[in-house]
Length: 188
Ligand SMILES: Cc1cc2nc3c(=O)[nH]c(=O)nc-3n(C[C@H](O)[C@H](O)[C@H](O)COP(=O)(O)O)c2cc1C
Image (cartoon, rainbow, N blue to C red; front, side, top):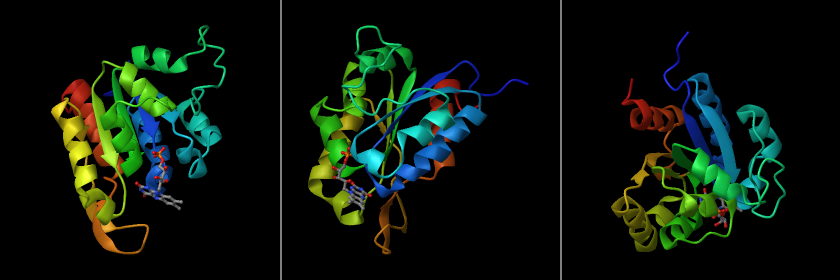
């Protein structure tokens, strides 16, 4: 059976938002659609979801520190291998802080270091309280990423971690996966 993302290579970056647990669904759905998936996560993200779980779901070692020794990367710079390997990088549970670092071109963690070294398209799914999302700093940072060719998916209106209903909820995993499919295979 042919799957829509057969043969495609997707890097999922995970940030330190409450929505990080939904990265598990994104990884699972991308693999269901045939993609090979690798995961990079920030240190903050590991407080919300474990590298062990994402390794089990992705079938690959997870980059959770730029200092860890990856036996597959002989030079010890797995962010460079991931950057070369992926056809698209999709950053989910993107916190306000992570979006700011991406916009600034910082590279102090596996997600931003890979993004800076990567020439593949960047998709970003923000997740935060509405006040953080609506802050001019965050809006400016998201606009910077868009102006560089990145695509911001969501956030959407809905129930937030605080219990309030507002805009800041991460787009649902199926919407994020559909955006990846559209980018790689034209929505087929
Ligand atoms: C329980 C908890 C929940 C949090 N949820 C969010 C969130 O949903 N969105 C966000 O932008 N920051 C959130 N934060 C703050 C981020 O975790 C913090 O800014 C962190 O440095 C972000 O890490 P990152 O930049 O690696 O994603 C939360 C913090 C805590 C302690």
